[in-house]
Length: 392
Image (cartoon, rainbow, N blue to C red; front, side):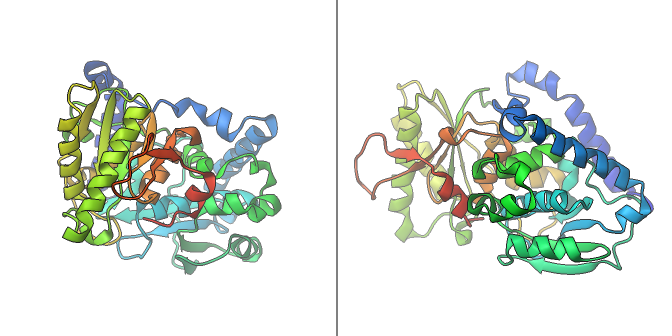
């Protein structure tokens, strides 16, 4: 388009002001401006000169392409709009991450068009090495369009992107962690990235495109008194329990998993635990367990906000409503020193941990049958489990 509408411009200006005041806020309340592993990009994603050079080459190529009409005409556009079926936030981010590696492999510029719940999602990110917004004046009406949701093979998409002429607008949630675990796409299409682990595949892509996520002042309404250092527990509820209590038949299982997750945090020596869940009954269980832990020196924090699913709920929310419903949780998980999966391994929290460059050694999952007593009640998450996760 010729330019952003006034409302969008005002939102962007407000977000820039929030980012500018973040360090002052952190100094006042003691909250981390960035996650504890935010400085690991070089170590994890580009440890060797060849790795760094690959990112730098694409950065320079992309910058030239933004002002080169012939180059822009071959754009790959990752698309997810309010009227699109894209999956949950974890699905969306893993698909976007795959598209970055694909664009690098075929030397085409990547642009992003992403609107959910009434918001331009790029307004919630700060650009780092490349500007993925669709350039002003670029029209996508003549581009080929395709959707690869829960389908598509990485090498087949590589061949398609490598041979097609003109621009392509794709919607995909291809599980980039599984792509890196299986390995054939990386070996054949972009071997310079073979050193990246499946756990870090999302994080390296997103951190190349965007700055580390920071806790904006608007997020404080959900998490007002959380200390700087904490372990996060994520209990991913069933979709039909999103923002509600689980069904009666599942409550005992839910309570058992919550208790084991708290014990897991205790076994890790956590001084503070933040419990994140889309289930209201799981949050109540966490509050009850927290009372039992009083006197053990471990603080437990639970958000009172009700969760929403970004793909199932098409309500257009205010910026504050969007943050409260899911975004503040997502940013918070990136600030954790460690992450415990109390239920299923979730794409939502898994993507957050990867974007925070949380080491694989700091990811745990609850183990054992309901009622079983074991110590510790958790074990490290294996790379293959992260790669196989399809939970949104």
